[in-house]
Image (tube, rainbow, N blue to C red; front, side, top):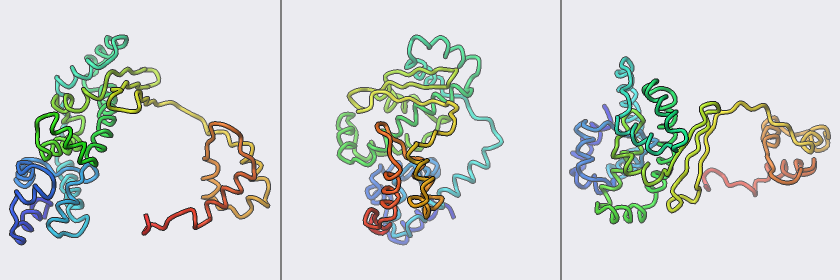
Length: 285
């Protein structure tokens, strides 16, 4: 049994219709219809909140639909593994290049043409999508924000939620111009990449983001040098003698922008880690 079949069966058992289910899930009736008829693949559970809402409405065990959806998606992936991925939508590529800073646009355009849907094009597109999806996830948790976006675009709350859910479930192989216009265009002002270090700099809309620039880079780094105070802490067995390997790893990885911690600081930090007053139990979170 797949997730959609289970939903259909529970609707019949509880004598509910798709309209009521759509209202409970905060989406349009059309979205539910496409999902249940197989016209739309079940969204990835880690990209949506719809399964939790449907499970509550249909009185299903928590996580049941998510597990079935994952199995269904894995089965679809196995069937499609034999084929080659389709290239990016031409309009999407044009949009990505339009946002590229003029200084590097010619070089990037040549790379895209020589290596169609190659590593650089996929890396840039995926990075821009990840940034936009971070904003979309925040939107999804803010119902007031969704209503404001809906009013601004002349759409219903449910239609706007469906748009966000669709975008969160999209990958670079299925990215459309509509996605770009709805999320990437208002968010991303420009981007550039250093092809030697694979460093991507993205300038964001100041009115929409409190962070104006994001940088992503791949560089080789050596192991971080341990703080002198940490080395002294390890040498002094009266301070570190009963520290576990896990605690030592935690203390070693502490970083400081200003000041150099002493060995006694690490001892006090070790005691803080062990003090139950400083941590809530999982059932209290």
